[in-house]
Image (cartoon, rainbow, N blue to C red; front, side, top):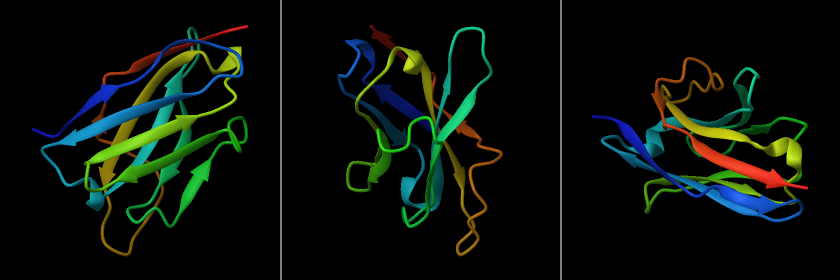
Length: 125
């Protein structure tokens, strides 16, 4: 069964940092395009970062650009979201996600079919 085991998150103050982790189980993370999404209360789920299999192509939304970074450690079978300079508007539930990437055919982070259960992040002002 393909799944993620998540960790990280919690309550922090504005300006602090957090790192979210998702360990891949049942599949080889190296073969997958990966992404982080978030969903704030009452809002739609938003894609915030996306990375190709070799991390050569990385896209981050403007609202977190320069503050958040997506990366993976293949040896640890883990993907990460490093979040710095957190703001109250970053408060949300964060989801890791993955989809198999056909070799040489990166198409971006669409139709993600492996999802984490969500990690709650709260940033106080």
